[in-house]
Length: 442
Image (cartoon, rainbow, N blue to C red; front, side):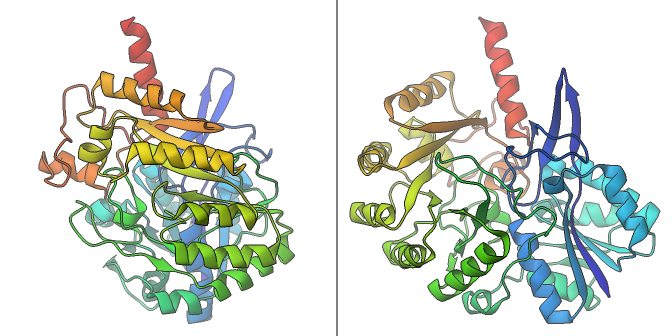
């Protein structure tokens, strides 16, 4: 049996002289961005995330079923649609898996129909956040064999064994994670992946997970609600599963030797959930001997653990703040973050010589213009090396999307749908529109 895990091309056309393309699998909030590359002409330097769940599922399926498995990341290859479809004409796959989310779905459904036209005998399975809410619709409207909810190692095996329709959440246990094979990389583009923040990255860069899941319930956050958990309204229990130090060291040694990575970025939902895990990873990274960085929270480890990270080679971190207004953080986002404590941590990280990248969002439901201005003032008060501002993306399967259906969510008592709230799924596009509206209002 031949199986393809595909991250198909997503070219979004030109806006003036600039060509836009999207990122899909591997991105928590898929979006479109201007890119340096042209179709079939890759140029390094644009943000490109590793398709984490896809890579793990590909290697898991190969071991579990003995199938001939390929992973083709057309986005990281900067492959044209013509070349992608030519490959499908050349190679007959029995099953094709595609990961999708709200921002890319209209593109993805066109791709699904074209795959079916080219290879009507091929079974197509859809995975990703889109299946949290649209599985029934997809199965009814598209030539799709199955929709898998949540992370999809076990679900993909079930599809190959004959499952059809909706394949519900079946997550790996922590023990199963640590006995699973290392994730697959598309060898044609394993060194194309790149995230320039936090500052100090060195190419080629390995983006990796050391855990899955996050216990926090930010209203817009996608993967803990849809992929590593099943909690669309933020009222359930969210769990975290860690890879062991032994697993991570063996994995990192293998990919560094195979691909020549010179830098490691831990792109967990939250890398530093507790001192114990962080200290174990510090031991690993001291032995690996490469510079590294991580996606973190400001309030989940002791100050001396930050110092240990720096000592072990961590040069920088990303910190999610979301808003500079404490009421918004507490009552709309539900991040449970003390902004003053976060400020103190940023100053400590700078004292340690680490770079800090902050992430912020605008356009939350119920957020006022003055509260957005508080965010801009808060950013100005921090010694950040870089920061990211985006519009709040509304992705299906999240509490933010559920708010639209329910009108009110008790856990998010400050979130409300006003007339000027924009329910856009592409956060970059939402921010562009908000800036345009603000400029026209002056």
